[in-house]
Length: 223
Image (cartoon, rainbow, N blue to C red; front, top):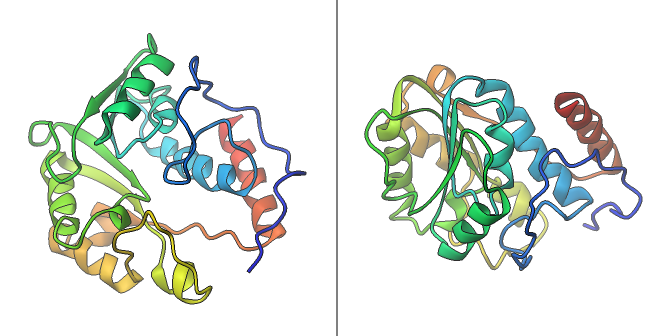
C-alpha cells in the first residue's frame, strides 16, 4: 500500500514550536517539524486528548520529543512528560523551557517515578508496542497505580492485523505489536470497566480522504 502524497497537504500552524529543534528524526519517534500524513496522525491524538485535560494533572507516558506534553500543558493544571531516553528528556527541557505547568522526567513506563494516585489523566500514544511482552502488563498496572480515583487513561496502539499483517509490513522499532483483543485483555486486567475507566481509540490513515478528515478536525480543535 502506497501512502498518500504528503507534499501538498496544508498543515495548520504548529500549536507548539520548539526553540531548539536539535533532536534527529530516526523513524522511531515523531518530531513536530515534520509534515504530511505522519504529522496529522500524531498531532491529532494530542489534539483529541486536550479535550479531556483542562485543569487536570496529566502524565504523557513516553513523551519522546516533548511536543505533545507541551500542547497538553496549555490547558492542564500540570503536564509531565516521561521518557526513558535521557537525550529526549534533555532536548524537551531545553526546547520547551520556561513554559508554565510543564515538566519532563526521565524514567520507564514500567516503573513510573511518581507517587500513587498522583495524576488525573494518563496519555499513552503508540507506546506499548515498543515494550517486550513481560513489560506490557507492568506498564498498564503502573498507569492504574498513578491514576487518582476517577482518573482517565487515553491509550492508542496500532492494531497488528491492519498495521502489519494486512500490508506485510514490519516496523523495526516495534518489539511486540498487539491485536485489538490482546490490548483489550491487557487493559481489562487493571481497568475492568473499560467504558468508564479507559478509552481505547484508533486512528487509521489510508487515503487522501482520511487525511482531509483529520486535517479539518485538527484545524477545528486547535483553532
